[in-house]
Amino acid sequence: MAAPVVVILAAGHGTRMRSAVQKLLHPLCGRPIIDWSIAAAREAGPSKVVVVDSPERRLQSAVTDGVELVVQPEARGTADAVRAATGAIRPGDTVIVIHGDAPLVTAETLRRLADAHDSSGAAATIATMVLEDPTGYGRVVRGPDGTVERVVETKAPGDATELDLHIREVNTGMFAFDGDALMTALAEVGSDNAQGELYLPDVIPALRERERTVLAYELTDPDELLQINDRRQLADVTAVAQRQILERHMLAGATIVNPAATIIDVGVTIGRDVVIAPFTSLHGTTSIGDGSVVGPQTTLIDAQVGEGSKIPHSYVTGAVIGDRVSVGPFAYLRPGTVLRDGSKAGTFVEIKNSDVGPGSKVPHLSYIGDADIGEQTNLGASTITANYDGYRKHRTTIGDRVKTSVDTTLIAPVSVGDDAYTGAGSVITTDVPAGSLAVARARQLNIDGYAERRQERAEAERKDER
Image (cartoon, rainbow, N blue to C red; front, side, top):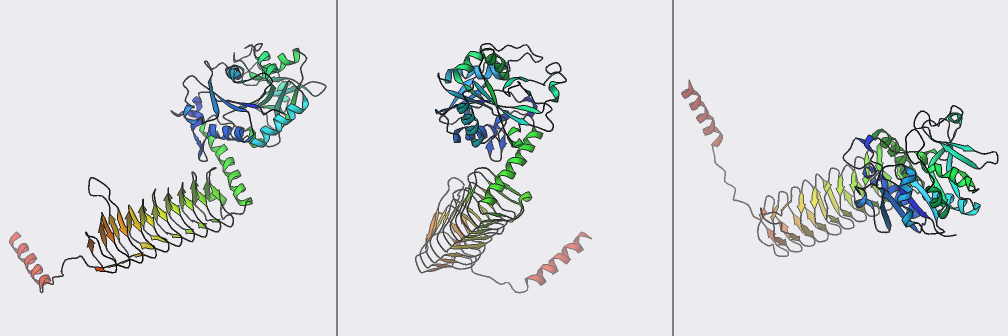
């Protein structure tokens, strides 16, 4: 059985979104809507994936290598959109047609549809579903032998009869076709309907007139039928997609304490025995290793977290966190941050573009930017690397087993050698040799009687004002 060509219809303008952004480029759980359909099509094992776009080619940025973009010159309906893709279809191909705004269709469904079609020898196989409330969907009319005679649209008055409207089996918008039969039938589709459009389901009567068989393949999961046409529907589909993502992680061995208070993007990977506490958001390409605890109230964006780490009440973006690392509470890790195994970034700590060595600690109230820190180093409270001179960024190098005292400021570029110390309140402007103590602060001066003289001056000024 040859791999099918999957055609994704995506040329609609999506005006009901009321947005400057093309409808299918709106994000859905961390991935543009169109990417969900493309991902399902790729996973189904096709010979080719074709996306049908409008003349503006607004989806060009979303189409990756291995996906062919074609243009529907005018918005004349779904049959015309498939016509735009016929140049990508070779004789003998099986063609699967899906809609880009129905993002919850799975690769498994596409594979089963293709298998059912290929094994039947039919000219076309339409994916259908039986709904309690079929309002708004095209109705599938079957013949006495159970084959499909036609699909009756219900978009506008006059498309369907009262009898048609009592049918509960609906067209899902997914089809499998014999490619040769499809291209022949497309040429015979007309626009004699209330909308004046060329409907793809109208290829069915054309196929039957040539004594070709059209079968139905019934789906059972109504989530796969959900489409996005406006922001309300986007919210509805997002809720379903989010539930599916959370369930997948829980079934794989992660504990999500409160799914209703957790957001996880589709591209996130989570290991076994991970605990995700409430009000946590995981986005982008974030990955979390076995046994780590994330949250509560933590946001991870494109972050890598090793095994056995703990990250409560923190915001992390573009950082790499090793095994057995402690982050937070109330830490902010920015892009380029690397926390090696066993290290710590504590309360009210901000780290940016810095490498913190194994076992080293930045416990609290510190800013570390553009720094390289060795092993088993401890930076006291309010340690600051002053990395910007107003023109350029500079790096700070801190060796192994260094201990800075509170309120140490390191003016980059500067280096502190292994086993060195700094005195509290020091502003370090030159390199500190290994094993040294650096004290860089003004000598204390005590002025006796200062408070009394200040009070006397204030009273004198009040008398003058009177």
